[in-house]
Image 1 (cartoon, rainbow, N blue to C red):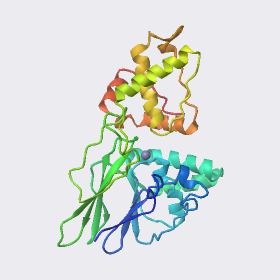
Image 2 (image 1 turned 90 degrees about the vertical axis):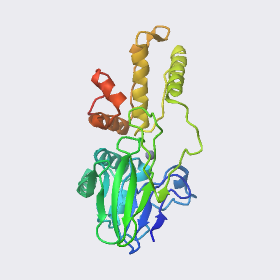
Image 3 (image 1 turned 120 degrees about the horizontal axis):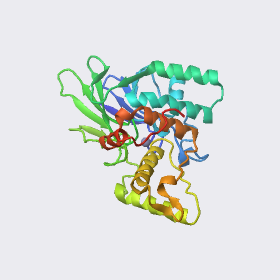
Image 4 (image 1 turned 60 degrees about the vertical axis):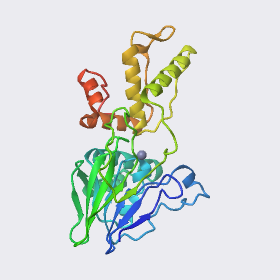
Length: 316
Ligand SMILES: [Zn+2]
């Protein structure tokens, strides 16, 4: 019998960390995220749960769905607790993961460059990038386990994860962990495709109770909001997530500017002259990371690139 244990994202929606245990006790973790927001408040249930409070001796590997901090932020604690296995993730996630964890350590833990450098070297050593749609053996023998990643359309490098759990003389069990899934037609990233099947599905569903506006409607609202602010002589401040949302916003703002370059956004201000400032080191680093990983952009975004658009700096 397969067993599922959730070491996070149980009472709330952050701190994702799921454990899949095989009949002989060997196990794999999917994500190891930080608790955020209300879940870290003094009377929050998870306030003191930074340390890894579960046994690791039979954990053979960690699979990372994507590099948002609520899915990867406890990796330093995992390594400190003695986890020795590989960290599997997509190629793009393998490049972005050190940026996120370096920032998290600097902001929340230490400014000691030597210590951070040692951690990043260890992280690089343990990280095993996997191509999408490629089976990788995690546990050889019987029982056995293999893993395969598929694009999730959430942020660059994001994946949902398929496992095949095998045991001699029995049919393989297919287990799917969703991670965070992007909506179809998200800017920049290819839409996720549904898995063929699943015997067990572990689905994360932060916004599962909401119906999103279409992308076109959202872009029109963004344009109208900017024009309203500019016509009052104002500036638009957007408190966006550094990773994913900032790059989507830059992408959509470029589309608005491209379409309306000669038109006025406000009296005396052409859309082509509107300035955009990304005022966050992590967001700037990540935007540069997105620029270096253009081969993972969707077909529409690559067409725009070929036409000379989206000249994002690939270094900060
Ligand atoms: Zn996420």
